[in-house]
Length: 274
Image (cartoon, rainbow, N blue to C red; front, top):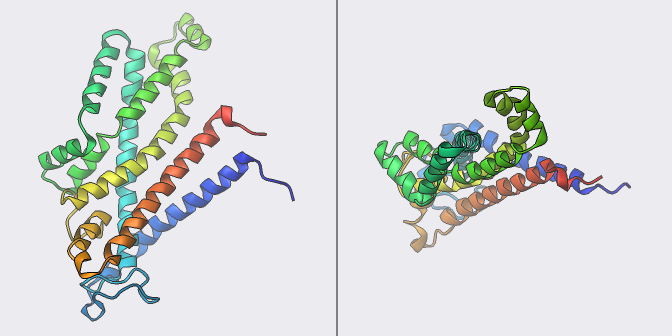
């Protein structure tokens, strides 16, 4: 049997991880709201074959709530990381192609953003926008672009010194034309990898913010809300209310992070293996 090379094996593992993530998202989205209705005849049950994650003290199945919570986190994380990645691309291009005072101004702006802790800034934005779901989403989206913007800026600085860029300028091509035809295609791998790697950070911040009481309303089955509710019952021995949702969230974040690493490996030309 022919042995798989490293890139083929990485592609198979990445596809498997993506399938698991999609299954969690689709499964949570397709589960009806009635699946997490209260059933007081089943309240406070420990993990069992009938309820593998147990039930909470309203009788709701914790496995169903966890899947729906992870699906919700994936939705918020996907939207927030996509917005953040687009901001990073725009800021990085502006800084690198603007030169002079524009580059210095953008770098100063990036340094100011980096000087404020993410969680504090997200909370401030959420409070300013009435602590709703929109405020939480905007807060997560506009605070995670900084590192990717620096990476993109560095890539553009390297690209613009290339000979084909100088040749395009010699033919009278504008900066916008050069950016669209030569710079953006080169940045797409970094952009997509950065987008995936922003994903777990966005999910963790969404869960943390929701745990603290900002963002999503308490009736939504978000992981942060589930964990916040579980704190009331841990002292009574119902540790499954926190362990299973918490571990599931960590596993999901690790899977997305691993997917990002594999995609970066597959898109990096220097890693190519024949």
